[in-house]
Length: 276
Image 1 (cartoon, rainbow, N blue to C red):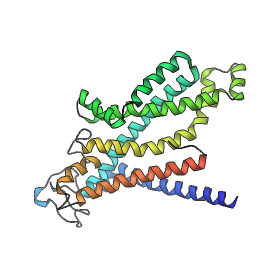
Image 2 (image 1 turned 120 degrees about the vertical axis):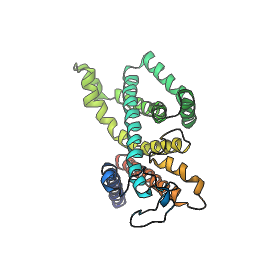
Image 3 (image 1 turned 180 degrees about the horizontal axis):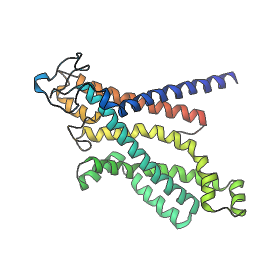
Image 4 (image 1 turned 90 degrees about the vertical axis):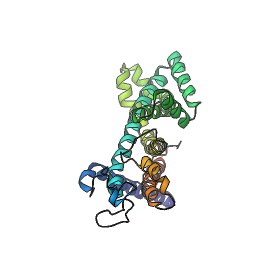
């Protein structure tokens, strides 16, 4: 019992710590225009590759742009688009998962076979193929990542709905004449929310990693936008002479991904939800 109490207390501390870090990052993304000391895309070749100073806290890149300002604005871009991917994929997966699990029959078979087809292709390869067909660009990358990710949410939610359908209180609600919407609202959705919270925190890290990977390959966010993956791509030519150009955005990606993963781990322990 004491060990269990300690584990719960430890997980709560970790949840609070991760939330604080994410809140700080959120504030940075919101107030980046006021926190940044310089224009993140302003080119000044006379100050290129400068070391850290009062005017440039993290130095400048190969075009004389303030690295600190670009990191701050990169928080807005990376977190914003990753959240867009997560929300869109989760909404799509939640809708399809509930429909597939609750209705069943040929509808379930059709939707799940489509999902199986998408899951048979590695996610990064699918996005690369999608971008190759429709052209490089942020919109294509975001749409490709959404099409990859909704399947996972849909399959997990479908499994939970199938399990919930067998519960006595669902049967009682059906017998009492409750509408499908009422059953979803009062009995289905509240029971899947803890699992969605865990999935969401874990998959936000996935979204940021994949978005940064596509930008690093030159297929996602395009220069001069200060996205972390694109910044690593721009700094790779200076990895020997000025590795800080890659280290700073790389550390930010690592911080965000590790924070989301630790939060997901703690929430899974707190709610007793199995991880992916």
